[in-house]
Length: 372
Image 1 (cartoon, rainbow, N blue to C red):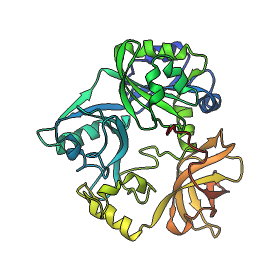
Image 2: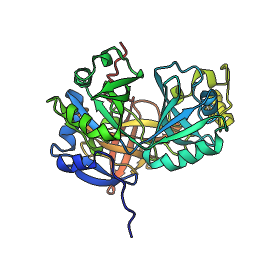
Image 3: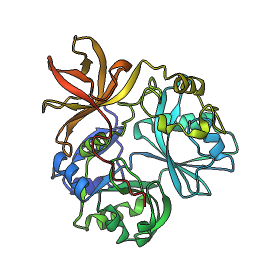
Image 4: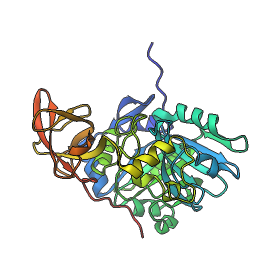
């Protein structure tokens, strides 16, 4: 018997809107709508796209020591995270690998944490095993999560509550929308300006319909979500990041806060810190995450092996597609460190052929976050 798929509070609406549904992280999720992946992608870049991301895990950490407790699990400055701000973080393991990436928001009276759907169960177990008794972990079961992304996202959301106009990238506030309190952050996973909105499940469909009533807004499925994030050089956990990959190998040095580095005010103290801090100090890693653009028009998919000009295997593609905004194949992957320099030519094996690719700086297209 196949396992029964979970559904989000918006499942019936996706069916009504003609979504093509696929299994994803244990949920029945929309991969595309009538527009199709390419048009959805371009619509999000040009106007506003609405994503159902309710499969993600939403958690609350409460208690005076919540920030200090979570700092033992992530290499990120949470203690000094101001109220009303959000920060990207990742859980690390004893080998310095990444066991999930997450977003942490300081709502003053609690920390609001969003984790990946596929890692939700293990993350909750990890937190329960490591948080002290005076920090309460609450698993939020009664809220949906929507992302509204694109250059017109702010005017669409401001029509429901003008206060969002004053938010900048990584701000987070409790905002009244359709008569209920929503947790709104000015952030997202597309490289565009936009918002992520945690809404009570009972009002999720009402809010979604309200947003969709604006002609600028279209539903966007998982297919375009993947091409949008890849063009902007954003990692997908379980593909570009995993338990065997350290933040240094993953080119995520910016995600290790200054306060937690060797010369910081709270150096180390997180799981795997000895290995990660040594890699930062010595730059001694054998491989590196890099961006690649295709020289031919053929897309190069995850799992394609990478070779040098002498046919030596040097790495692997971890994400790859045709970038509709870039107008060429884009990919990211890992190569031996000596091949990681921008402009290096490498070759991806696709159906027995070697396709030329070039190491390119990420993001492949400019990010449009609103910083005020």
